[in-house]
Image (tube, rainbow, N blue to C red; front, side, top):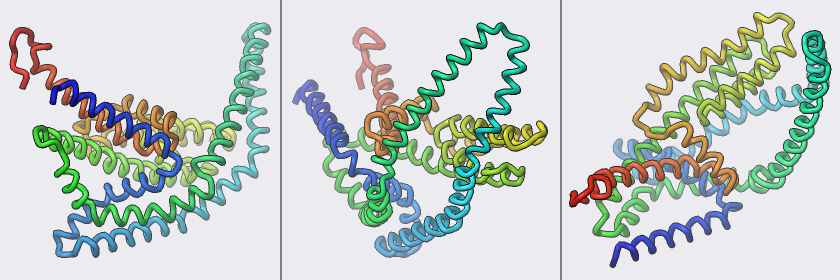
Length: 356
């Protein structure tokens, strides 16, 4: 079979897979989530097998423990989070009024130093931006309510995901072995090497970055609550969760917390303390957590991660967000492999260089 026919075969297969993924994106969420859980828990299951447990027993123990941990976290956190969110909603009118007061004082300071015509243009631009922001927020909420977190999808996620995770985790080694027997024999070893590289990259990022997000969320929530910031628990957990996207968690958390602190506190030192919490968190993350838990050898650049998450979400919705990091890892490893082959080929070296 010629190189052109090989390439055509794999391109057609990839196109069919992407089309099927796009058409089935509305029902794939619990299956993708279950696959992610199984992938993350597989090394622990292998360790339990090495200690003498059968694969089925190890899978059962891990699944039960995972459900217990999730349920315990829900029981402990949901009432507190629900209370803070309800309190935040009740205080929205007061916060808006406080924001207007702060804006009025700021505007008075600006009016004393800026030309009135410039003030009118700024007010018009701000009003137009506010209208667009409200329209975008309304559209986003409508999509959320009708799509990703609708009640039916939430129930399917809670019910189907553990089942999928259990069966995939139990049969993980057999699935991998069966897939291995279907690899093209001529290129099997090369494919295995690239898959091992993808697994190393993906595992290093997901498990390492997940631990970083957990530590940061815990730190932000506790520190903001100790600082006396209203809704500090919610803001801290949101900032920790969004830290999965490089820089986004810190920026969102800093803006939200400082904005709430300005509206809540009358003295700037307490606002500075709230801002300092995020600067300390970023210093600890950049100098200790990420180098130790994620490392520099993962090979996923922050810009590439952000692009993958945005592209996956735009094309496939929330399922695309879940698949973005694995896809980014696969593409990144593939690009590095192709670049390595190119650097060894006559296209780079010129003349009759060795292609292998």
